[in-house]
Length: 320
Ligand SMILES: Cc1cc2nc3c(=O)[nH]c(=O)nc-3n(C[C@H](O)[C@H](O)[C@H](O)COP(=O)(O)OP(=O)(O)OC[C@H]3O[C@@H](n4cnc5c(N)ncnc54)[C@H](O)[C@@H]3O)c2cc1C
Image (tube, rainbow, N blue to C red; front, side, top):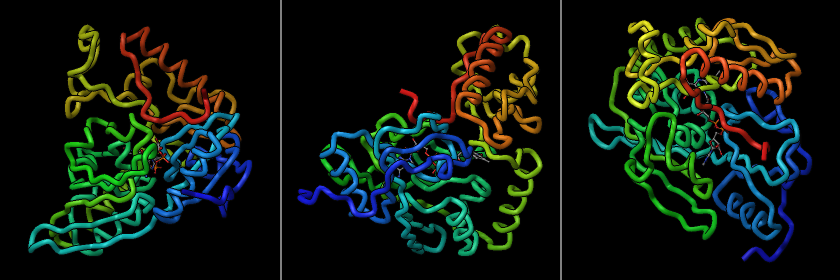
């Protein structure tokens, strides 16, 4: 048990805007950076003892933090170990901590000639956040390379290894997104032996493509999930959508937003990107309330015209 009620390194009233790619949000009442498993456990025990809610923060690249901030403890995961293993001549394993940045992981895999993560080049965030939201792009997603995950269950502080099936991965979803008692400590990824030059080339191509299609301003990436046609409730929608717009069984949310005339729509310093309509950008000094206004407006307009209920890909902190 943690006898000392102090948590060394605990910070107070820390502005969360600087920890999110949106650069939006109020302060965390308590803030702590966990550099290893032991520190993470200490922080969780502290929160339990003080009876304050906690939030696990990765790279803050998929979040909208309320202007009022978070009245609990934000734990920033910064566990940073990475180990590469040659399993055999074709299969390669990387064991990586939840706090490692995805960009570091993609570069390392490319340098080693391990293939399977090229699509992830240019996605910000940490391994924990990426696995939590089953991040993906260009028809691939992280679930395809996850072998197993070391998980900390917060209410009993037990360590468990989850295999891929236990993680219940689906489109931008996993068990970790729905159960906040589970923290991703480290992930074992299974990659394949590839040609270093070809891998590097693909990485550069994906990076360049992103620069072309995505805005460079502060944002949290795509605000809404694309629409899975198989789950579409109102099939009449399909009659007014050109078939060529549906790719891999999904209809891009950005297309619908564009069609309701909201591309470029501005609320104070927040704007629906002119370059990619599923991005909301912070032009400098935007508030969470401005982003919320644009989100609600978009949902209303898309529902009215297409009968489609857009669902957020971004996650909210501090709004309850
Ligand atoms: C410019 C830009 C482009 C983007 N492009 C893409 C894209 O192509 N595809 C895509 O899928 N996403 C994209 N995103 C969104 C975002 O980068 C990803 O969702 C990323 O995986 C989020 O990781 P993060 O570490 O920043 O998570 P955060 O935003 O910090 O947190 C997201 C969620 O993960 C949880 N979490 C974080 N770490 C852990 C952990 N160790 N254990 C348990 N839960 C944890 C948090 O509690 C929270 O619920 C983009 C974002 C931006 C800004």
